[in-house]
Image (cartoon, rainbow, N blue to C red; front, side):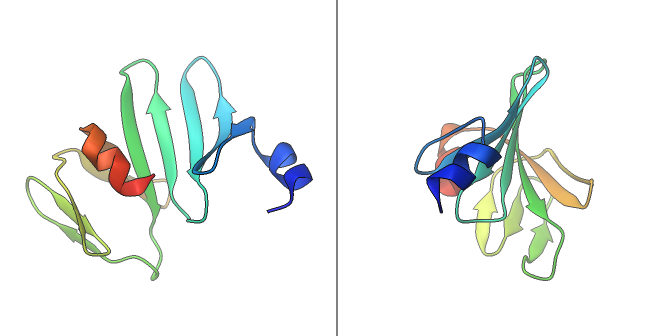
Amino acid sequence: MDKNLMDALYVSYDEKIGVLCDDEDNTISHVLGTDLTLVLDKKDMAVYLLVPLTQAHKFECKGSHIIVDGKRFDSDIFFRKDACQWIQMQSKEMLSMVA
């Protein structure tokens, strides 16, 4: 991607993550090269993975985990909101699967 476009889109970025917004409540980041978004809720210090609810993704919801496109995320907190599947990232290993 062109550096000028990256500078216009993101507050900051590296090779994996582009920060779209960073305010007192949330940090919203885009996983570069994908359609995935990460949201850090600064009040609860919880990180959520947002996966668009499109035909490009397949979901299998189980009680203690969710499977997205064949990848298992061991999280018991997941819900749908704003046309996305929200999954709370409950370990650093889960984050490394995405970014």
